[in-house]
Image (cartoon, rainbow, N blue to C red; front, side, top):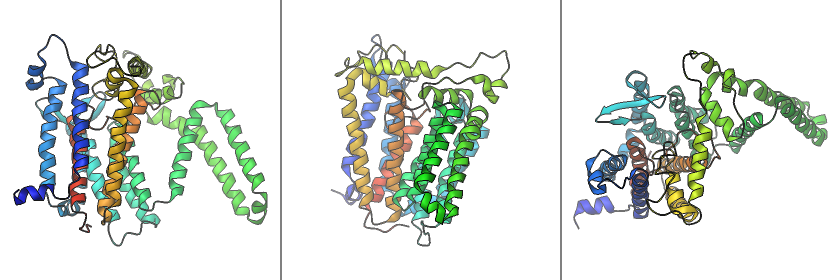
Length: 447
């Protein structure tokens, strides 16, 4: 074995590589199941580069080259150029406002020619993970201080804000997954509790009538005051804090949440979120919807149809599935975006509950392996980056699968390594193989 061959394979976790190869192969297979037609020569269509599954095969080949290049790269380059790559990613996202191509209502793509498009918001996840790892690994950074926490939050929030401006709400939500990596590095649990409480309050605002929720919040505040009456007598500031939190919660449910849904979000976005909790959203209350001319078609509610068809497709698979290339729902194009956001439905229909469980177990093992890799790092940079990779993958998997079965609103998040798309596949490939390269050099302390 030559020296170069020893260098590229030395210390590399090949279990991750095998799991990666299996998932990419399953993704190409799923896209093939969705688009296959009996009257076509499947071998010729695979090599023709005109179908989505043949394009995905090309993307996989390109990613294999990129992965090899990453494994041959010096790990120190990722720390040296982390901030520069982050700035480059932000500039790419800003460039979409000038050069961007509108696809499905989102101006977040840069056309590259030949039918291929680049989505900077996808690539920026890599750069954000590197920049966050770079910041937290600095010796002078004390992450227990509020200033450091705010800087780390700003690093992750900047691309999220740009994604929202590009009408990519799903990708913007992905950046919240970095909280998991920050929590591992010492982010106070109170911040996660506050965030979770806010999410519960928003859901309660959508489900319950405003007056009923206000009464419930008042009762909760009164009960807390009663239970803490002795402490309240000794410390009047505690009473002020409880009343302040009560006023904040009532203000959020009365004014903040309605304002966001009626003035900030698009009508279709509000509709999607309301449909998740079984409610209907009145688009006549949406400011952006009212600004549209009367000549345009009325805003439709596609999400009920999307989720309904997705559930039918997955449910029709039963316990063992209909079999390879025997699905009637996915191959009949009843499920919208079935080769991208709803690719999970093809698995559910073809291989049933059993196939879905096995598939999700592969994901679970991948996440477990990544966390194990993260915990054996000597370098804070490598550990933070590995946890960022695990967080991003977990968020994508959980949200994508949940939205196909109606447990989460449709936000346009691809299934990692499975959904069609060059930008998505390249992003996850680079994320994973940078982690593998850092792990192979885990005896080094990188900053």
